[in-house]
Image 1 (tube, rainbow, N blue to C red):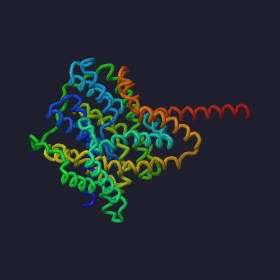
Image 2: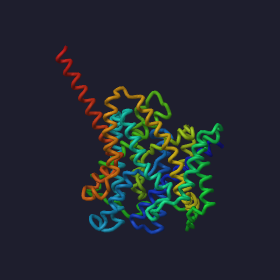
Image 3: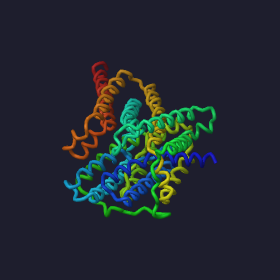
Image 4: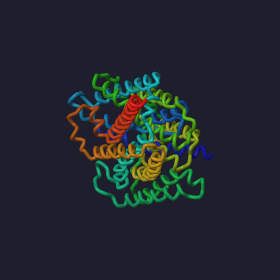
Length: 434
């Protein structure tokens, strides 16, 4: 029974954290209500399939998948290209479907040629620390806006929503540190249910949309046949490399949480191969490409649920209920501030995990300099308005508008350059003093 409840908790947590992306993208592309529901369904199904395949065959960790922020930004950029490069919204979505299929193929090739393992070696404790802190800084603004009830259509702070969100945060903290192991294990689902009840009492719950069918299968190529053009292919190539960076960081962090020794060096190859398959599925279903979510480590720390079985059950439930629109509509009605409040607590745990990485470094001076430069650079880019890069190519826009990726890439370049310099100096000193 505990395993099933843990699986149900995983399911609610996964859907609550993923529902915002397809809704926002549907709004950007002016999709009809039917097209919007199809995008939500296909995205949620892909996330469930991706998590299940990764947990069973890929990295084999309880790391849930979520809509990749990089793909989200590319969807946003391509929406602005309608009328410039693409004749309609549907044409842009066809190009994006093609881009995801190309990205999937690249993931598979990189894994087959065993390049994933080489990229994984770049993720030292220093890089993991920088990546996690940039991730926390980048998402903290979204958490605060969400808990204040601020959206694109409602730009004023809602005091009632903020107070309710704070109550949910306090409940989640209390349950996570409760002496009763059962309450600790199910702290997330209990917090969401209590929060839902509180929001319902205060009249802050959205209306549940009526479903037009009991069961509905996702459509293949819902926007028409994918299109492959030079710009999209270039974007997909560079985006795949950045997505690999995201995925490796999430896996490396979970390795730390799970305390897995010895390291499984084929883990990254399997994870890359599965990511390729799921990206191809995303392209075929017109969904948003997914990536392993680093927040899973904080979730595992919060609940203490480390076994794979409950995670696999959760992923299976995600796929199963996404076929039933009435159930999906009920879960979709969970107020967004509740999801932000619970995730806020989970990311507090991740601050501790990030700081723990610093205990593993051997060259403190090097780590401090690289961290300082990369964090200032990455966080600084987060404050640059997106309009400042609007005249650049989609790839550059995706990189420069993403402080997390830019800061992480700079950190890798700086550290590898420093390591190369130290090796070069060591070789020269040996030649001088044989």
